[in-house]
Amino acid sequence: MTLDTKILILDRMPHRDVFVKCNQLLGATEATKSHDEQLGSWRKDGPPPGAPWRIGNEIAQGLPALLDIYYRPDGPLRASDGDCHWFCDPDCDEDDDTRACWLEVSFDTAYGYRDEQGRGCGDLHASLVAQLGLWLDERGVRWLWRNEFTGEIHSGYDRLTDLCTDGAQATAWFRTSVLPAIEREAGR
Image (tube, rainbow, N blue to C red; front, side, top):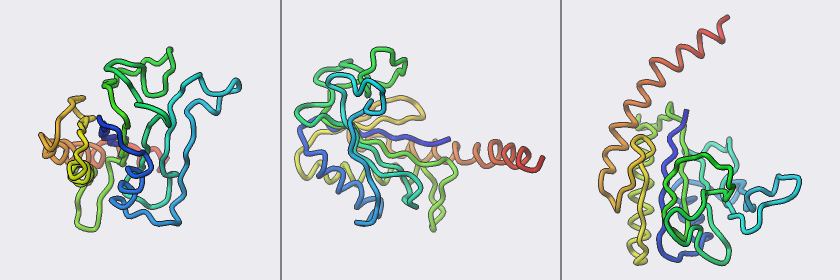
């Protein structure tokens, strides 16, 4: 189980600039492996017309969060509210909020995450949202963030502490319920 916190960047901003900043926040280096691909390129018939792109880091590199940024090279990711789901597949049944935005940043971390100071995934995500938000604010770029635990969209730094509280509860649930079940299964 993972915590996937989304930041919606409402104003025009180069996706590569945001990618570089997010990687700085995560402690990535030039050796960090990444991808930049059009969604749906794996399909036999190729990506759907106008499908968005995703730039992000490859998994299993020791970073505290998996980073993906969804964008379109020549325009906003979503021009208006409700304007297609993130991968523009008409069969998509996800109920994610589809607000108008230029970019959608995703930080994804395992519930069991703990850093050297003992902070969990919610603490990490609250810090990432705040730091990215400050950087965007300095540039006059509007942004929102989505709390995966509640599904609510927040403006600015409103309710960031909820990530810490809910993250602690998710981590406790993972450690007391999920991890013991995995260990029991592994011990069979």
